[in-house]
Amino acid sequence: MTLNWDALDLAILGPACAAGLLVLATHVPLGKQVLARGIIFIDLAIAQIAGLGVILAQALGVDEHGIGVQFAAAAAALLGAGLLAWTDRRWPERQEPLIGTLFVLAATGGLLLLANNPQGGEHLKDLLVGQILWVNYAQLLPVLLLSLVLLALLWWRRRRLAGLWFYGLFALAITASVQLVGVYLVFASLIVPALATAGLRGRAGLAWAYAIGVLGYVGGLAASAVLDLPSGALIVWALAGFALLAQAAPGLRRATRA
Amino acid sequence: MKLLAIPVLLAAALAAVPAQAKLRVFACEPEWGSLMRELGGDKVDVDVATTALQDVHVVEAKPSLIAKVRAADLVACTGAGLEVGWLPQLLRQSGNAKVAAGPGSFMAAMQVKRLEVPTALDRANGDVHPEGNPHVQMDPRRILVIAKALGARLAQVDPANAATYQARTEDFSRRWLAAMVRWKARAAPLKGRKVVVHHISWPYLWDWLGMQQIGALEPKPGVPPTAGHLAGLVGITKSSGTLAIVHAAYMDPKASEWLSSRTGVPAVALPFTVGGDAQAKDLFGLFDSTLDKLLAQAK
Image (cartoon, rainbow over all chains, first blue to last red; front, side, top):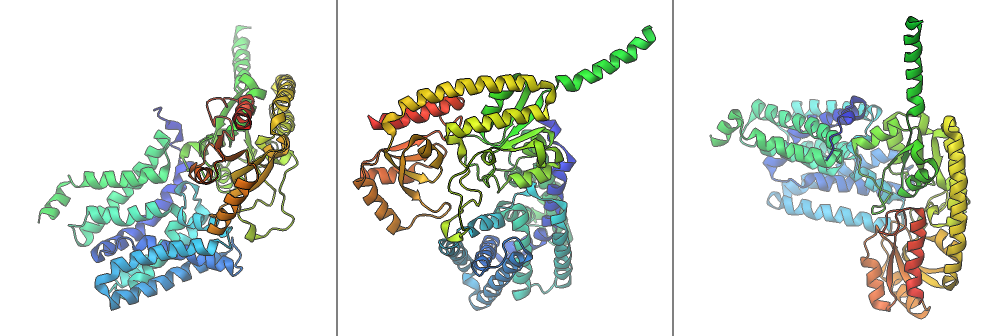
């Protein structure tokens, strides 16, 4: 394998790196919540429901490139979040299988709707398999604003993040991030840093999780440039790699043993 | 005199560097990469974004792809919407204005008359391309038209080597016309024969060979077939004396084999582009292989 040092170019990797850091900003604290609640597949379900919203909007004649698609995706995701907040209250012990069922219903519901609106399929793919390398700075501005609002709300509700608050904020964060970086990276950004720091609470846990996330994105992107491999997939592996390495760090080990 | 000679030599050396540097060409698909090597020879440095064994509608984003487009002097793609899922993003990320539009951007399908141009755009018909069917590389007559246009384009973006491009284009055209006569003679037994396809990627091939497509496993691109459609297709395939069920080498043969097992009509994988099988090493091999595989069923 030839190493390709020329590809380490900030103009190519810069926007992708910024997108990754933005996604991490909201997903690391949300991931801790997701792990604590044991509902790790909720991001896949929410992303599929947002996709279903887009297909529905197009079937109803909403312009496929306009801002209308974003509203449709966010509205569908929020509706899904509302439904999940309700099932969480009603049957808390069955939340995980309910989320799984909602995921397959949304995914296959999309296929059934697409039988008559095949063009929507392309946009469903765009929505679910965003590619981190195709990101540009102009696209990041609205996500930056949304992330700031979400982080402020997360901080404000930090002691009482439950029910509709949690599911609603989560739905908005996922709808934006899946379009930027795709479902694999969203899943990894949520779960891997949270899992690696499960033994640590409070500020220290959050700091370690952010460090693992940043190292994973920056290391994975740089490695994908040098080794000429698909960026999204390699970042997932870099996140897992740094999460494992972090287990050797004294700060984390003491916490896990305790 | 010596003092003067140094800057003169330096200037000469500097001027010589760009003249020696090869024209950097980025091709979206292997068939255009291959054509570029035929027409450009050692004057061009060709990078190809995809291989024959992948679906060119989707491409995994790698940093090297952006770097290659950024360094390119000429981008040669199919166009007509084939690469709409990734080429616009790639061009935007590369920030290379030279190849985003104008002489540095060559769209092969737009050089020829396209088939299946819809009269009305209706979503009910699947993932249709408004510019018509983009898979023009399967018609040698269109390849010839595209080769001449591409040769002229190479001469336009790299005028220093215009004579070479012109000579190579003429040479290629001569060899290609001779091959077309040979192919036409060999293909006589295929005329009028009927085929069923997996995906509607082949209208240009059938148009050239005078063959008839009587059905498709995936009649609306991007939409899985319904049970009723498949039942009808089994009936049509059985009763029409169908020559073969055709799919591209990059496609999963499962659907074709399913239909083959129910109808007794053989499923055939055709290379579809350069590199699609061992024989399709260049454009000539692509058509040799395609004809061999179809003729093997006609015996």
